Length: 513
Image (cartoon, rainbow, N blue to C red; front, side, top):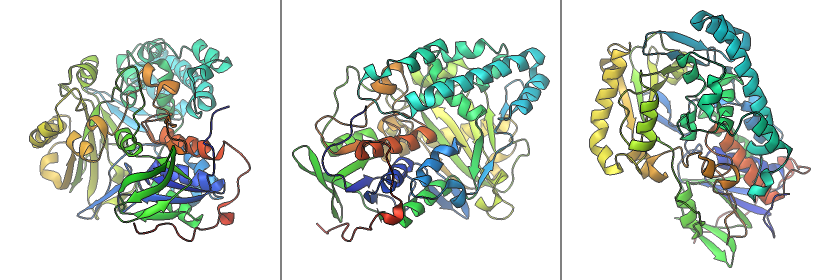
């Protein structure tokens, strides 16, 4: 049995209207709590924000939606559903992989379609290996879903039990790359089922095989896109929360927390003082710890995941070889991971994610125009160029990236750009992200499960953390789960939920300080 916060919890203030905060708000509302959400930006979404640029509607954060049933749990808490509020489009293919040797592979989440594609690409033996790998990934997900991903931890001892034995029997404590190599001999295919280690911030040859569950989400469970862009998800969550009684204060930066002993008694912004019985904090860990005035003791300093340079480019043309999501792999592999996580150098032969959302939803761009999102992983500012360096590097890196895209088949892309926005680690730092990375703490063994920064902070009795820096980790599904887990810390876990229609709207949410 995991701990929940003690004392009154009738009115909860959620700091941050990102996916974690919105998930927490919906689950809290479903449990009958009064909820106030405070957000520094003028729109909900947090990292999953929206930028309008010359008629282009640009998602500023994640581009891949998997495991939509986890989002649906949050909507269900207040008596509605994801599909009532968001039109989800399943992507076929989920990805297109393009390799340095000129070969191309469409990644399908349907087993039969993917098996046929791999047989075309690499032969029958590899197709049989994929079948075995798919089965193992499914077993891994089943072993982890309820016991490790969707679970709070108060002690490493909570790991002990049949679930841990099952995970060990599946090879979850081995190495991700080695486990994939048991099934696939083709090095290109191995990349398709292990590049996701980058999300965890660890090279595939060193990442725990347990994190191959991310490959399950990407290559088996289905990849979706909401009509209207990824920002449609937090927008719909915020609307559902408001209809269920939550009060939102946008454009309000939290400056401090008032305390009485170990309890937070009020959240103070530039303009408001909001009394509370409990608080859910979703900013990046350094911001949260600064507000709490507490930094948990750890035997070693937190290691952060690599960062990324993102180029948003609105173009007057596109390239038909691009799918909605295209993985453009460079020739190098292990060397690039070493550069990203060890030496701190910019990738000498980059692997890139190119997303073309207008392939699925043309309405995100002006008529006849196309939106492209290019993500190039780069070292975080702890080990690579610092924020100040990127003010000089940025323009030069952008030009080199466009030359590389041109060389890889996107001929004339530089001259096709009408509107653009370049985001570098300096921008992530300015948004408050530690080490200039939006991907938070890396998922090393010492920063996984019960060893990850916990969502309860010693010395504070009624504050709970949510977001990618705490349990269970990075990515849209884990972040949504983090909000659910934070709500459970407040409410004492799953119980008979009242509907939002029975939750009274508070009458005095904020008092001018």
